[in-house]
Length: 163
Image 1: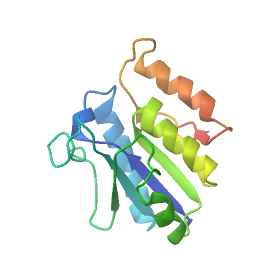
Image 2: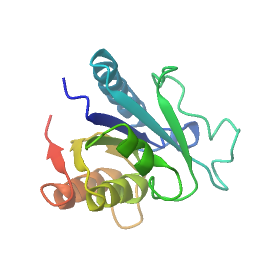
Image 3: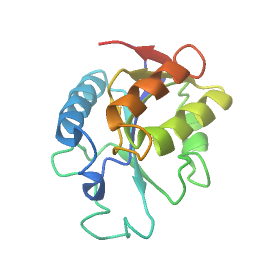
C-alpha cells in the first residue's frame, strides 16, 4: 500500500456535464475512488467557483453520481491552478503526500495546470490515459485535445499510464 499517494479529482461538477464523455468519465473516476478508498489513501476534490459555476448553485455542485465520501477532502478554487491560494500544497505536504494521481476537467485548463504546477512543486504526477476530458474547441476536437495533452505530459510532467 502506498499511503504517500493521493487522488486529485478536479472540477467534476454539474455545470461541466456537457463535456465530451462526461458520464463515462464519472464512472471511471468512481472506479479509481473505490480503489483509493479500499487502500485507505487520500482523495481530494477540487471544486471550481466562478461566474459560470456560481458558489452554491446546482452547476457548482460536484457531479451527481460522483462517489464522494465523508472522509474525502474538498478544496474550493477560484483559478485554473488547483495550488493557487487553495491550501492544497500545504495539505499534501502535511499529509506526507509525494505522489499525486490527477483526473477530471478540463484537459487544457485545470488538469493541465495541476499537472504542470504539481510537477514544478516536486510531486510525482501520474494520470491514467483518458481520465480527463474537455469540450470540443474551435481548433481541436475534445478527443484530439486529450490525446495532444497526454503526449505533452508523458515523461515530461507526468507519467501517463495507458489502460
